[in-house]
Length: 388
Image (cartoon, rainbow, N blue to C red; front, side, top):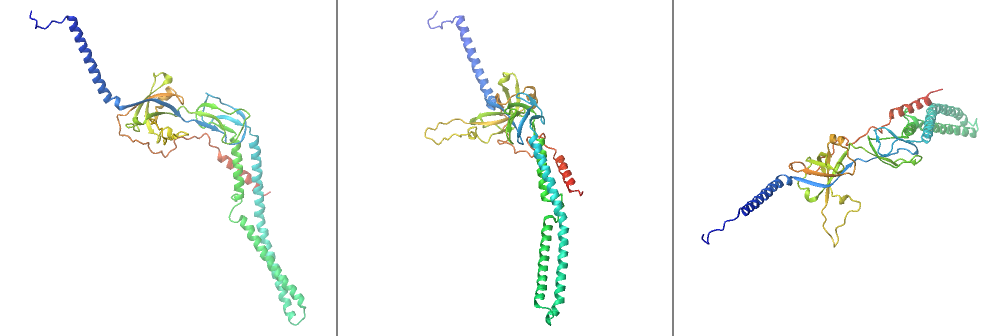
């Protein structure tokens, strides 16, 4: 054998080389596939675990002043819209209602007297006119006798003074008529401002009696109760918090560098830590906050200092949740979420849509029977205005 001939490799070495080449090829192919996957899929997604469930936290408060007599719901319990949750002692409100009723009746009776007094004042004007005419006639009869000194000058002066006094009395009567008419002319008793003011006070007192029952404005779960039996509450006092779990969304805090391709209307896939990632929620981007989270903090950061360090800011992105999925797997406010937004479609708007003309949230639970209050007030007015 020539010394220049290649040395044959053992079979084991050849197998090892082929395995290394295969493994290398597999890594190269996997890397290429991952690069394609990253370019086509991963680059079209934005993911964050800095996301939390948010929702409406409805604060139940009193509308009138009173002492708490009953509490009919406690924390973790479900309450329906319109359900009576807190009842105040009604004694103070009922006394105030009785006082308002008395003031309304008194106002009507006083105005009845004023309306009835107008004809009496008008009659006094006619009486004063007759007195003036009588004084003028007396003066006219005495004037010829004064020319030939039949009557003394003093009697003529008395007659002239009587005419002046009658004229003054007539002027006073006319002014009294104007004053009497000014207070009642052109308006009926029921529509008089004084009656309307007393009527409004009565209606307010009537409604206050009904507002001693504090009702829930929404259907939800009691999250925190801060009221105690016997407490003295005033209008605006927070009694308890109610969370409607069907009105939840997710605030996903993305880095400012991750917002480039996020648009309103894009779909999102979410998972909650409370279900261990086994439950997936399908959402939709509703809008992006107009400022970073630090911009709305109580003490915004002041970066105009010599030792400034750049910190990547995060912007809250609101994501709506599917109502059916939310009913099947309820969430709670404040829970952590993992969010992945599909950014394939970048044709949507960057900013949120204008607010709709219809209310975003509303309730009919707080409405009061105002028509019944009006009917009760009108009945008092009619009773006091009746003659008898």
